[in-house]
Length: 294
Image (cartoon, rainbow, N blue to C red; front, side):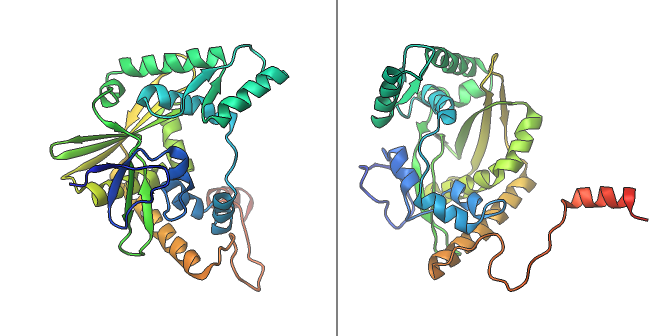
């Protein structure tokens, strides 16, 4: 079995399958020698290679909208940036702006007092949940391990970073924790489609299989609402959607390999001398054709 190796921020993963502990999140996400699940998803529609390359080369600054999610991860997984409260309800004063900037410069997450109380309540609700609590119980797994391997079909170096990895006899369980505006099963289903979580599921299972070679791998999503009472939905993906996600990953890997080989990163249209046609979404074309066309 592949073992965990503690590595420094400047140490690159070896060429073979490897699980590395101690890789800072910013180093993991900035790695250009491999591609992650979010990268593969960005290569396919509604994204495109040109947008992927720009975003990779010009990483966006931290967004306040992500702070609550990152803070919840910190309290649930005990891994990630330090959380620091900035006193006062308003952050538009020069003093507050300077304090927020200083915290971010140190790699921390600035929170208002009410936000800190919110994420603490989220973590408490998760610990009490009959499914999520035991899955993410402290001391039962490893947080934020970085797994690297080479895709045999394309030669592309891949990486995944499970939130929580539980290695048990005969089974390795990966748990992915997501905070969201709506954790209802219907919203989770839509989010799986909209954000490509079926691609994430498939790549993480494939990566864990390639690196750790367990007898069985299971990938579990834990979704939690960011509004009280911080309800939780725990789900495993159905196999057909996982198969679709894997097929999408395979196509994205081929696109990525070709772009790296040629240095050409096309937009949605690609090279053509003709102006392509476009129409409404298929379902709307059918509905309106039935209503309006003879």
